[in-house]
Structure formats: C-alpha cells, structure tokens
Length: 165
Image (cartoon, rainbow, N blue to C red; front, side, top):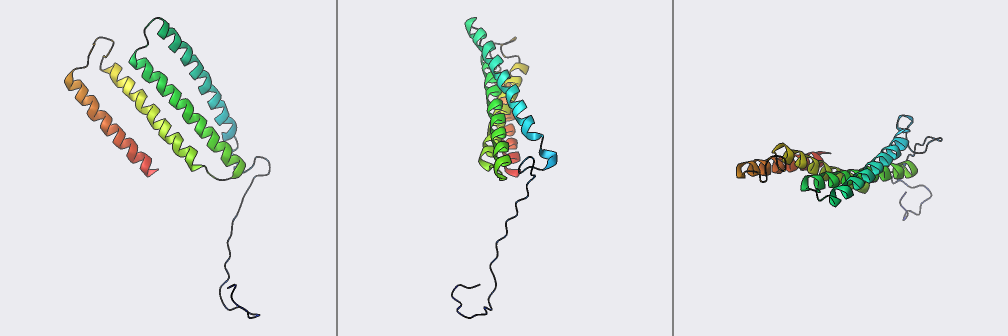
C-alpha cells in the first residue's frame, strides 16, 4: 500500500515481492539428480591435481636433459589451465550447494580457462601434425599462413560459442 495514504482503507495496489527457496533437506540446494555432482567434482579435481603433479615431474626430467621443447611447454600449460578450470567449476558448485545461487564469476572464469587450455592443446597438435620438431626445423611460410588462418577462425568460433552460452 502507499505509505503516504492516511485512510483506514487504501485503494492503491499492494507491492509484494516473492522469493522461493526450494531445498533438499539432506543435501542442500541441489536436486536429487544433481546430488552426485558435488562428489564427482571433487573426485575430478583430485585426478587433475595428480595429473598436474605428474606433469611437473615429467617437466623437471625433460628440463634436466634439455628436451623441454615448445610443444611440451604448450601441453604443460594446457594441463595447468585445465586443472584451474576444474578448480573453478568445483568452487562454483560448492558455492551453489551452500547458498543456492549460481556463481557467474567462477563459471565465466572456468569457461575462459577451458577455452585457453583447448586452444593450447589444439595448437600443440597442429604444430606436431605439421611436422615441427619431428622432421622439420621450421614450418614453411605457406604452412604458417594456413595455421594462422585456422587459429583466427578457431578463436572467432570459440568467441561466438562463448557469447551464445
């Protein structure tokens, strides 16, 4: 009702704000079919952390024998970014489970890190596919142009998908 109204009966509309909060008493703010995602997210995070630890061990061994090439650096960076992405997803789901609200910041950061990890992995595979460091010391000018055009289109497609979701 209008707070300025002094009559006993007010003829204006009533402002009502509704907020529904559906919870599952056993598992918090998630539905029963999503209840296993919490434990799955933590299990995947543990696996990725173990993979990152093993990757660091292999990286150190390659550094000792001076065979830590750019393609290996791309793979190590891709694994590190993927681990950070899974950590962001786990944090976002943990916050959702405890508060019931989606954390858009963590999910956006997760998508960004995942896109960067995928880009580095595809770049590494394309360089190896072109024979760089296997049979060639340098990729031809024509091959470099093809790679550049491909990756510009890849980034544009990735940005378009990110904007659509």
